[in-house]
Length: 260
Image 1 (cartoon, rainbow, N blue to C red):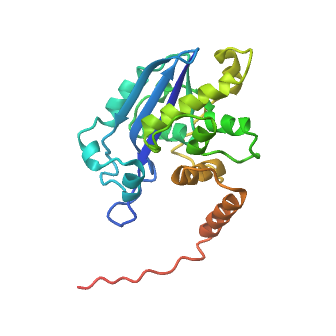
Image 2: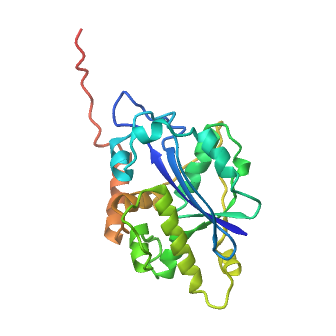
Image 3: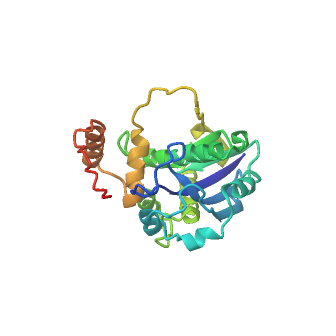
């Protein structure tokens, strides 16, 4: 068995009428960082690839500020299809994806399908390192620790370069090892086999299934933005604001100011 610790960075639409959201792919991958470990947690391969955007060809200012990535960096980079080909060469039948929150897996599958690539080449097994780190730290149910806070608690040396996909994958891999090292008397494989889940991605174009709020993903997005875990009160406020926004009670008509 081998472990693929992976992290992604995304671009998204600008909040202007000139760059509308593509609802088939609201988050376009612009960086993939990866650390591949063998069954004894030795690093056997790495990957750090920027990806030239094809959908949102203007970099969202928030994304640029958060990641430090510029359009100059991306303009000469490989396409998603090219990077996907490089990525899948690192997978085999015994690969397990390890992620800091499952949202990255969902977006990896969604980007793959959007580009009409073969999702069967992606590993189906995964470990949510964030969840198990939170459990290890005895956090309340539903609370997930942020990556930077976890790195500090587990005494992982960092360079304060979070939101870089490669370094986030690197820090996640070190936390992954730390969690396992405390499971005395067990080999890495036997220990982490207990934590493995199977990912199932549903992508029906013909039906519109009922949906519900993915609280973990919503809160994880805020935790990535602030590089820390949210308090119970903050989570409650975010959830309440989200539900109020869904009612459209604060929407107002927009006047048409066009002149002939």
